[in-house]
Length: 309
Image (cartoon, rainbow, N blue to C red; front, side, top):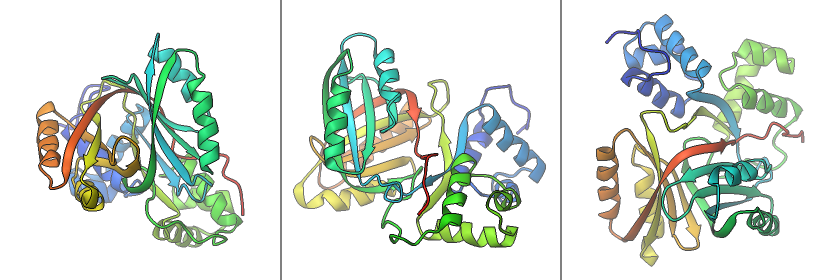
């Protein structure tokens, strides 16, 4: 395959690189090259192009608990009027981390993150008051099982981070692929000491560094939301099974009209049909409702205002 492709276009090699960076945003150019069959320099050129053209953004995403975001909610919004205008109003809020224009009954979906359920309730009241919003249906996350963009699982121990850790987290939020030399310069440590700190933060589930794909509606891959209704005892087993599927990028157990919420990313409609059929065939799955993410207006998983201990 030729390494020369038209500006703005993505080929299979680009898609493979994006997949690797979604799993490990700090994977070296040499490591990428070895897995996709390119020279190191060609891999570096590809990565830089993906970043420069805005196809991906590689940043460190800090565990929600470290940011004080203990409560997460998914909101499906029906509108009367321009969905774009309403999406922009929702995206302007500090507590929305995701705003997507969608197909189907709901014109938009939002993700809200806050410290308490009371703060979520207050935020929902303000969202519902946006001119043009007809209704907002809410799911509360009880457990996030998979998220390619953010750390999941146990929260880091309270008080385990110091000022240097917070400085590194801020630097990684700004640029997840920053070199250890550059990171060291920003926090006043040696490159070796900085590397040890970063490895500890990653291993301790404090931060995850990965590529966030900037979905514009023009790329090869499409994102589909799926709400599952599941038989009582099967909630957790089903959620764990779907989390293991390669095309599933997000899985959460939820309270509300769905028992689990998924996001699936596929390259073709045929791929999506296969994934949906597999999910619907799982023991315990009673119903799967789907919607297409047409355009992501906001995807923000990092807080650049992260404070110190």
